[in-house]
Length: 155
Image 1 (cartoon, rainbow, N blue to C red):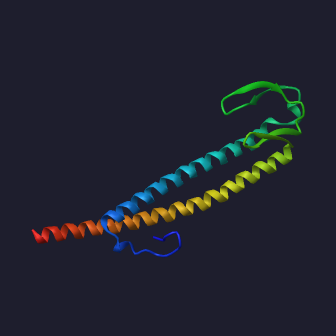
Image 2 (image 1 turned 90 degrees about the vertical axis):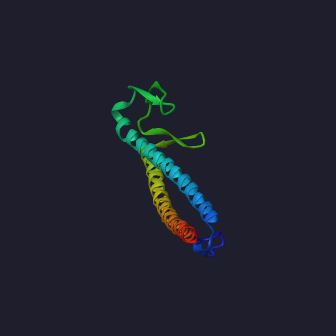
Image 3 (image 1 turned 120 degrees about the vertical axis):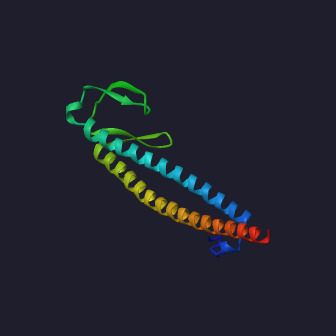
């Protein structure tokens, strides 16, 4: 295990209580990171859905025809598409920008790619934390067994 300054700590020299605290900390970090991973995966799926919507829903054939306009993930209102070459893109924090379908595709492709990179990095961190947790659990198990053996030998 490494401290924030990068100095190593010999976990075998820690007491059972300290090891338990470090184990709990690792478990909490893994839980947090796993939740973040799920949220990033969900965001990536939403961006992919936006790409699919542009590809399938916006074309020259839809101009002037009635469509359902999404206001939220579950709320749609009727509308008509006045210009099939331009769409409104949610760029985050409640800001919307009019873009061409080509630029909107580029924007969403960039978001999907960026999230894929972040997901890979996060997956690596989760794996490292999980490996560290296993190591801590092994040392903790060995210390408990040694303590039990010493207690039964003294009885």
